[in-house]
Length: 216
Image (cartoon, rainbow, N blue to C red; front, side):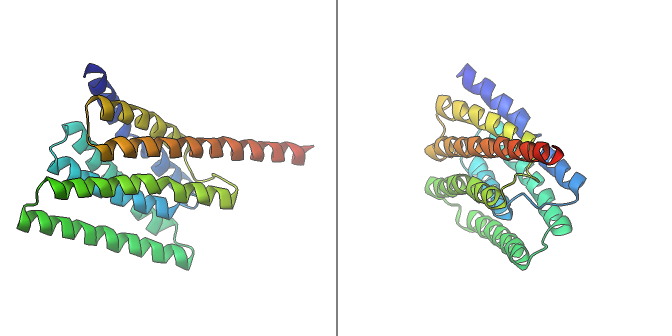
């Protein structure tokens, strides 16, 4: 139990800062190109579901705070997409679809909780929805990196911190006996994070080799 609490507190601290490297990179580049808007959408919906799941299932206060902070950071990044990105029609469409789905989902859940006072099954379904979002969120980014043959626009610090966080989450989920949505989601996201890290290393090395060849 002690190890689970320690890993929970470590992940809490890292969750509070994990999005900042990406947000700062977006500001520095004045561009959100390179960060998949689909990944952003899945993360946003995932954090929305986690927020409801955490409060509905009376999870530890750290879990609830993580959901609140993460959702706040994603709202900031959503504004950055609007300000810096949306250069293509497909990106604009995706942006407004994500906006609509997030608002609609939030209104639906609020209405259901306030009017029907749902039981544990409802919150388990929300937790499963969050797991699905965590399962899917890394794949659009991985695919986009492959198609662009670049990870420019994706913060290395964000990727590394995400991997460390998911290691802590896996430890906490199994030792503290969280429900299976939390256990499965952390494992899948960790595997996706490793793939992203390998992509960053591969394309950075490829760019370096190209620069050397050009210099020669």
